[in-house]
Image 1 (cartoon, helix red, strand yellow):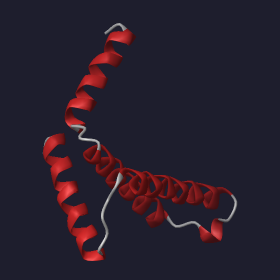
Image 2 (cartoon, rainbow, N blue to C red):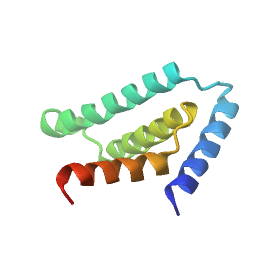
Image 3 (cartoon, helix red, strand yellow):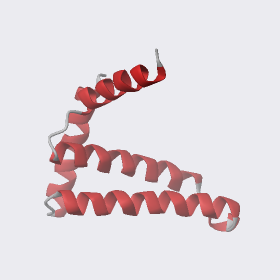
Image 4 (cartoon, rainbow, N blue to C red):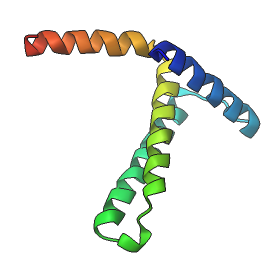
Length: 99
C-alpha cells in the first residue's frame, strides 16, 4: 500500500469515527488530540520506569496508533499530501547528508 492510499484509508476511518460520535474535525481540536495522545504515550514510558504496576504495553501500541491517526488527520485538514511530504523531505534530507 502506498502512503497516499494509506492516508486515504485513515481519513475514511476517521470520518466514520467522527460521524458516529457526532464530531467535526478541525485543526485546533485535532492538534489537541495529538498532544493528548503523545502525553498518554509519555505516561506509559514513565510507568515503565517508575510505576511498573501501571505499565501496559497495549497502551503504548494504542497511543502510537492514535498519534498516527491524528497526524494524518491534521495533514488532511491542511491539505497536505503525506506521500509527497515524506518523499520530498527524504530527498531534501539526503541532499543535506551528501547522499
